Amino acid sequence: MSQHFLLSAAARSLSLATVARMSDEEAREMFKAIRWADNNGQPYCPACGCAEVLAYKCRPLWKCKGCGHQFSATAGTIFASRKLPIRDYLLAIAIFCNGAKGHSALQLSRDLNCQYKTAFVLAHKLREAMAAEDKGAKASGSVEIDGAYFGGYVKPANYKANRVDRRLLENRTGKRRVVVVMRERQGKTLTFVANSEGASVDTIRERVEIGSTVYADDASHWNALHARYLTKQIDHSVCYSDGEACTNQAESFFSRLRRAEIGTHHHIAGPYLAAYAAEMDWREDNRRASNGVQYLAIIDAALKHPVSQQWCGYWQRSAKHG
Ligand SMILES: [Zn+2]
Image (cartoon, rainbow, N blue to C red; front, top):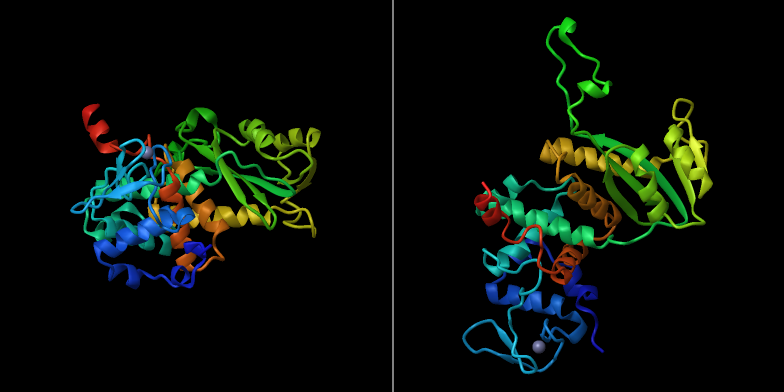
């Protein structure tokens, strides 16, 4: 059997310059090689799995001999009903991949010379595909747990006399959410969004395997974890690490997410907070892979991901509903 395309030398050495020089035909060949890597790059029917397909002569489409289904290289994937030439999707991914702190939709629209709306949806589709890798995954072994709050900033009034106590519930905007990270030492990072750290405990119980050792700071809501896991808490007012008990890896994830917030997006709170957290989680987990490998992993994830319920036709829907 021939080598998996993603593992080949040609795949590892891919760069933005290589992609930029590709013709649309070459780009399509690349999509084929990645999407159907398990069949030596030969298309098979996405509807019924039949390998007997007919290629159309004048259009880049195939027809299944088994069920008659017609499909393109991107049909049924997150790139379905695409608006840009196929090569631009490869370019978008290469550009998106290069930004360690993420890449804003505005920058992407300038880079690709496409509408902001197109770039916004494309970037979110990529995040959705990246997030899908962690879907249903559980953390085990030594797991660091921590939370960080995003959004709901209340600007202090100019005069001190007019300022309110921003710690009080009634003075908050209600938009503050916490990103909770569960990070295996020497392993994967999982994230989710909750209303408060205290409200995240049930999800942690579901997503961290029994038998794991959990490391957290000394906040009292983490005490509830002792009943289920061997839990080691560290009092950050005393020290950040006593050799074993620490949450340094969880915090290094948050420093990445904060850099993305401050340096790239300026604002990541609100409905898409979980998506940005998942993207940075993916980047953290893949930080040691070469650029070419990261790039191919994103394309692979995107081509394995079905049509996005959330993002396919997003602007058409939002226009209709005002
Ligand atoms: Zn078929």
